[in-house]
Length: 171
Image (cartoon, rainbow, N blue to C red; front, side, top):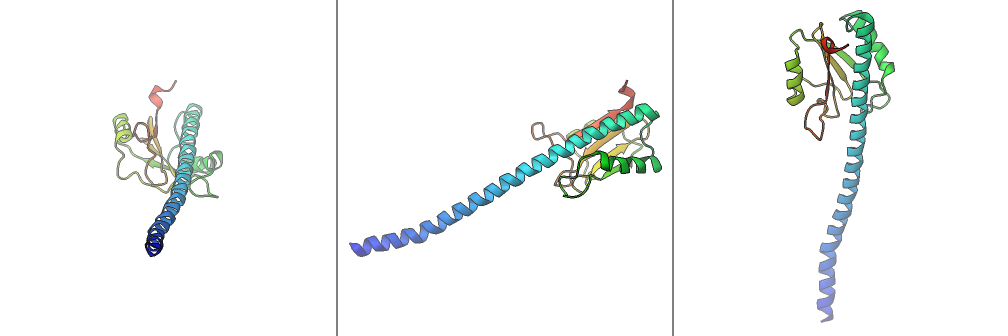
């Protein structure tokens, strides 16, 4: 009888302790995952705020100069200024957001609305990069690359978070 109790205790200990250790390890991993998830959410929020701030700056630029920054020196000067104007890149510590301008003469309102639903496969960039796509006339599409190097996604709607500026509709 005593042998049976000792044997049962040994068997239970050999099965339960590893399971408990695995449970504790899983709980630790879950805590790390939750922390990483919160950090990513904060970084995504910061990126979205910078996209909005950039769009406001571009609208002001357009109202003052009569056009959006044009390819060449205007866009280069805008990039330099905006790197100090916007918050630091939360995806890459100790670095600023990278802003890039891309000319797409075929960009139209329909493309922009489509890209909010289904992101183009070519929309990839280093985390924290803000891309301004322009048709060099009246339209800008701004998107920011999240931690996965793809455009940010609104978790509630499933749509890509882009900012569209159509200067024809501005006052």
